[in-house]
Length: 371
Ligand code: AMP
Image (tube, rainbow, N blue to C red; front, side, top):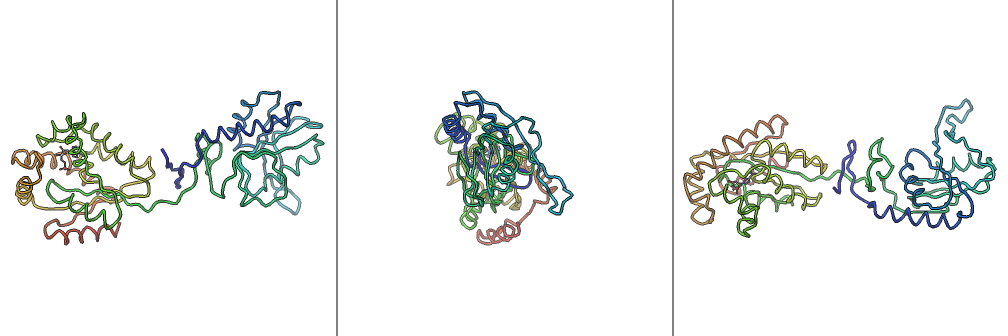
């Protein structure tokens, strides 16, 4: 998945685990070239560096020691207030080559503290290796001996780095991204109310992607795919296609829609199981349903409309009154209950669907703009 949510924020995939692995390999090569004739002690700065250090030392094929320290602040009694101290450093480092392994260096403040603390430990030499480096914000004069990847000043998580405690276990690096202003809307109503026609108008007006599960099924039927042959056996009778088949198909269609686009769902969900699956699936994308709008038209008008449409639409399910009645039956027994589902989340809106196409588009737009 390319977008994830941690606490209240969205992050998009930024640096892949393969790119990270390559950067670690290059760092190991450079450090090994300089240190292979001695036994360096690698010191990881907790918490963020634990993943990097683990990968680094497993790629390092010469003798070495590994240790971790944590930079802790405590309230000092002198006038400067906070004092930084390294916790966990038990080794005698006199005469040793120490290589600090940092996950990320940005302003260099932490690095400065570490330098100051190591200054009087009588080391043979102190070297700094960092996996990520932000040159635009680094303010110090200190030398950084080895740099994995230089990156712009973006907030990143993953591979040991966290956002308020979360995200350290992600294999890739993710970057903070602004909350998209996309709107996902469900266009709802019994067969023949004009969902498809209205969706076509609204997608232009609001730059949305229109997904009609009925259209997707019809395309599969036309292309005689396996899914099409299966769906046809249900659609021809005016029955709903089973949930597992429909949900799987919808997910694969939505996955092709970029996160920058909102979606008008037309003809989905049609059962409670589909509504629940959609909520879960959108949540994984860091998105939600903003509203369900039902176009309301009396059934008596709709049957006549569908029979009329059947003369030109070529749809097998529009041409026979029994099939049409069965579609209404499916709607009123399985689909209409979804009003309650969305009403309980304050996402339900109904509009009068009797009138000219433009009038109805206007009524729908008024709701859209409130969402
Ligand atoms: P529509 O074009 O939305 O009227 O859909 C035509 C037919 O496709 C329906 O009568 C169902 O047989 C099938 N279909 C479309 N969407 C769904 C869905 N979400 N769940 C189950 N069947 C569907």
